[in-house]
Length: 180
Image (cartoon, rainbow, N blue to C red; front, side, top):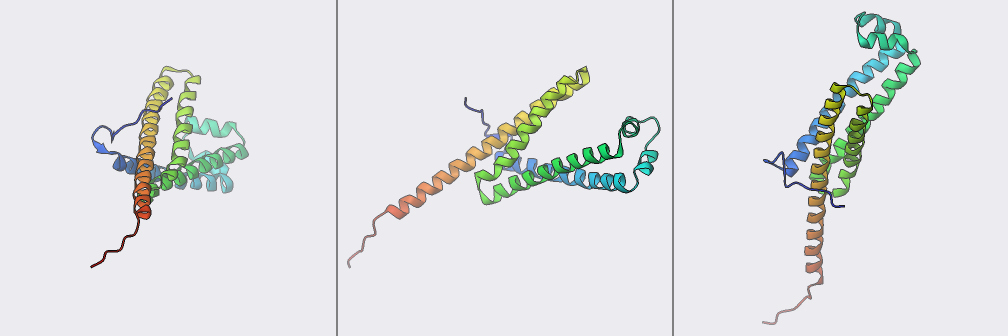
């Protein structure tokens, strides 16, 4: 089965610039979340009861945190930190791949995008109409991002092949000496 590809990002921007935009937004997103989650982890380790009391009394998060043990909350925050660490790493590799022109650097971001796509589809299992609409929009978004990243990988692979062919042509050309 052949995966569809695109020539331009959002039909008007060069594909490389689109991949750079996606990479930088994911870097920014993961950095913000990592900072926030690290602060939350610190609060949950050193001042869990104070953190629960700071939340509004009638909030969903307050009810959720009061219902679970502090260890469970720390574990969930730690999993989120690991996830956003992976997001940061894969986005950094995507941005670097556009500089180094190495198509293999797109693989972590492709895996992450597939992972996000699958989890956006799995939110349909928590069936409410709002969750259904949100998961469909997220699935469409991550599907499009996947197609864009696959397209940039194919473009970089073709560039690498062309440069290899050019280099092999120059190397295989016989050296001739000219007589005057």
